[in-house]
Image (tube, one colour):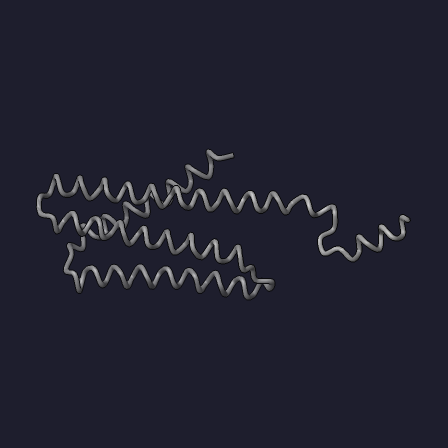
Length: 155
């Protein structure tokens, strides 16, 4: 009987001793998704708040639109990061080299999207560069602070 049990355990893909970590990993993924959604929501709220303050202080709507656009670019960056995190979790790479290439590709993709959107906003839409970059920096600061605060206080 014990020989049959030993043969059965050898045939299993996940040994019984390691099976306990699978629900914990799924729980961590669910928490990360929830934190990513909350951080993006915080970015949206901060962008709207910053644009409304810019509109009330500076006056012309173009200034507020530039702040809103900069914050929107930061939100696009956060959404792209969250999407790639979910995609990487659902389609894991089995080789470390492939995983590293994907990480570099995703980082380069996000960088190029941000640069392209910033250039488009400045050159084509002729938005105020200072207000645009101010909105972008504000959005990124909320992204970093929100991620740190939400992940550290959600033990």
